[in-house]
Length: 147
Image (tube, rainbow, N blue to C red; front, side, top):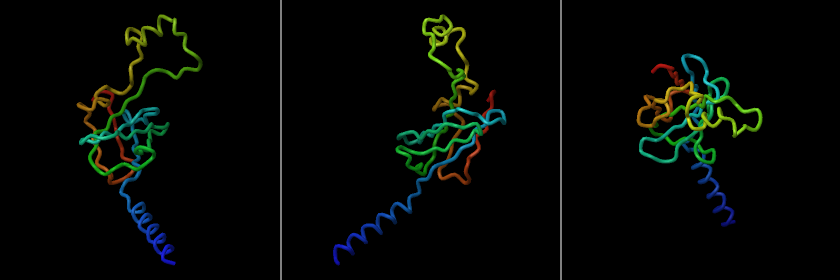
């Protein structure tokens, strides 16, 4: 009987701790010049350091951000980074001997430019911040092609 009470007590404490966690996923809606931004990587970087939180936007521009191992996002203030490759999706294996591919990989003439300005992917320059927990979800992030 005593073992049952101890086990029940431990389960109650565990459920209370898990149920009271303030860490929840955070939704963001990313637009570029008012249009949903599909396929962008969104990262939250805590200003005090730590592991970043990442997600990828869908065709509606919405990304659900979770912490490591799908945990929630810890409360705090974060810098928001948004990046997107301008390269088209490959439909087959690339021809790595192609001069155009080699130029693109080296970032030379023919390199595909990202539609998202570099300022949004630079942790030192991004103007975007987010406080978690947010007042509403998804949080709207409207990027400008000419910030």
